[in-house]
Length: 208
Image (cartoon, rainbow, N blue to C red; front, side, top):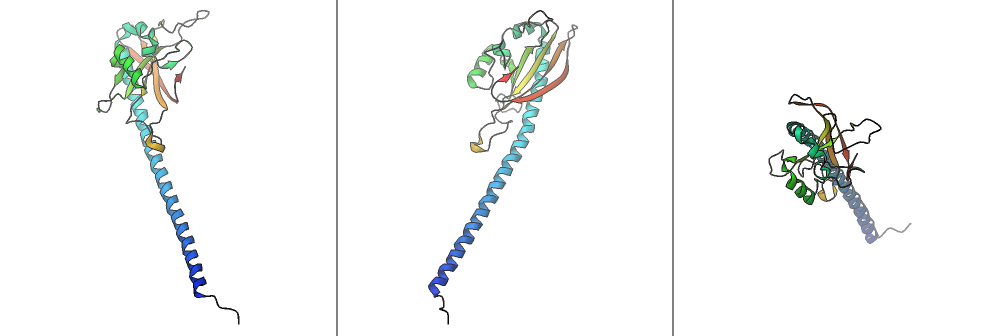
């Protein structure tokens, strides 16, 4: 007759099977929790992406109103791109930086009206800016500090800490900036009107 397994060996095999089952179950639970967490982060990001778009679009309307009312100061604004133009370019190597505390302080010292609080929490949500369109005819070189055709580009950047997405790791603010802008034209009769607007995202400096 074949030897019968001892009760100790049987208990050992059962214990090993239980350990394997518990390990598998723990892996499944961990996987489900990770999936649920990633889905929650994705849902929050998607929701806040819409909020950020609305934030920038609202800022654009404010920019149209503010710069439309101040047509007589357009050339003064255009000649100070370190305050009024956040778009980095060869002709604007030191653009305005509204997304840092130091940058906001410098801009506010010059013109606090360039910031707006949209949700009433006492914090800045949008930065309003202006830059010239290319309105010189060749062979003249573009003069970005002077308006020649009563048209400029105005826009807004959402800089809110509450209306923008956050990254899953560490709940850090998404560094990508959303800017929305459009053409503002002065009709010479004391009123300004706007054309089609456009928007885009960028990481780091926005570039012309």
